[in-house]
Image (tube, rainbow, N blue to C red):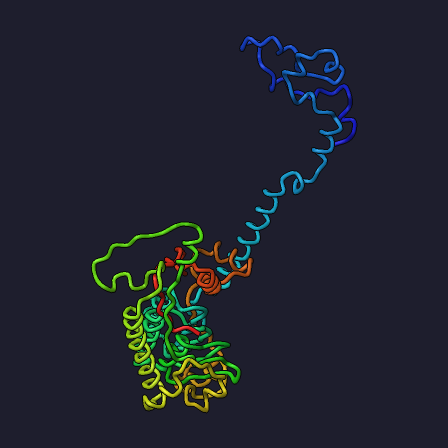
Length: 369
């Protein structure tokens, strides 16, 4: 397009955009409209607002690149293109968590971040248990723990799996509290010298909002049937009786944790109690205390599994299929997101990993560092 295309004598308003005589509008004779006509024919200019735009403005608009005229559409298209490309590559390479090498395999179970919504992990463990080609399991733990019941669910599922095949645990940066409990299901536990583990204990979080509610002038009146029905109310401090009641629950959960460690490490219960004071230990200290078997990481754990199962160390691990369709996985990979990381972040900001808002009135029982 040249400057000639925007000459003073060229029409700026198309006749098709003007009212027609059939509609009874007497301004239809104005189209097409030129710059000279604009100066002498005001009714026509009013009928066609586009005719009032100077030719120089039209030139600048039409000469701008598409990405500047429609930036949102342009960048959305770029993101969609690379998402499709990434998803296509992921699908084409077959990295779906299935069998690629054939024959027997080692399955990988990852326990990352806060242990809260464990259903995807439990479902994967059920699939692994039903798969006749799986000869051993590598559990990679990098977690500070989480919910008491959730941690026990994962431990129980891994313990049942360990009755059928060798299970090795590789501790990452952190395998504390509930992360340690999960690790106790393994027949061989590996840790790095600087791994943070231990934190055997249980805690209960009860939000207290009474002071805040008083400041904003909001109150709440609760009627209950049952002495301890509102014992964890966030509107008032606990009574001594209620505190004793909850302390009894915590003592019971603490005893369960101690028993799991004693059984998993084949240690006298009294010895575990001495360690179960909430302290964390480095991997090197944990080895001396008997909480882990060997210094090492994922590679050492795989070599141990290879000796027990006969599966070659270099054979591709069977991994849990990524959730969502291949387009979603491509976009997620391109943006550098991770499902476990998202769940952990959601938990840290007070959102349940299932996606709902956590109820601040509900007390939380946690095996968490």
